[in-house]
Length: 300
Image (cartoon, rainbow, N blue to C red; front, top):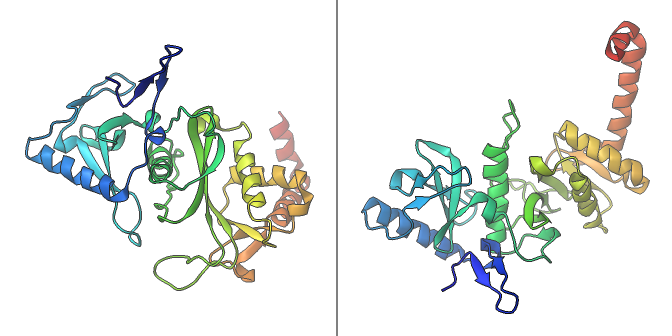
C-alpha cells in the first residue's frame, strides 16, 4: 500500500516524493474541523494518529495536547480558519510540523513540490498555496529566519490578497504580495489604496544574493502594465533599496513610475524611489568631501 508521502512508478521503479502541495487541494472548513477534532481527541486521550514525530534534527517530539498549537490562517476580517502545528515541548514558537491531509508534515516538506512545472513566480490561488504563504510569512520569516535584533513582522495576509510564491528547484523560497489599487487599507477605515503597492517581499536566507529579489521586483512591475505609477510600501529596507537601485539602473523607463508609498498613497504620501536614491548619494558624497580624515580611515 502506498503512503501519502510517496508513490511508485511501475515502469521505472523510481519512487517519487509527494508533498502536500501536490495532493488534492484542501478545504478551509475541512482544515478547521480536522484541527478541532484532533485537539478534542488529544484532550480526551482518544487520539489515534501518529504519536511521535521525528524532525530533521532527529529529536523526537511527542504529539500531545501540550505540544500542539492552533494558529489562525487569516486576520480578524476574514472567516476563521485554523491550522494545527506541532512544536517543541515548552516552546510554542519552535514549530516543527503542520497537520495537513491527516498527517504531520515537516516544515521543509510543506515547502516542497515534486511537480517540475511548478517553478518561478506562481500566483497564490489554492488553499494549500495560502498555507504555504502563511508558513513563509508567519513562521519562517516571523520566527525561524527573523532578522537578528529587529522587531519586524508581517501581519497575516487577508484571504483574498494578491500574492505570488517563488518556486526554485522544487522548493518555495520566497513570496510577494500586492495591495491592489482600490483595495481597503485596513478593516478600521474606509480608505483605499490610490495605486497598487508591493506590500510584502521575502526571500529565504539560503537563497539570497542570487538575483531572486530582483526577479520579484521585475515581475511586480511587469504585472501592472496599465498603471502609470506603482509603489512599494514604506519603509523600504536597505537591502530592498539596493534591489531597486539595480533594477532602475537597468530599466530607465521605470524611474518615474516607482514610488515609496505610505497608505493610502496620495501624492503627498509618495516619494520617487530613484530620486531618493540620487539624493542620498549626493548627500553621502558631500559628507565624504567634508570629512576627508574619516574617509581615509575607512580606506585603511
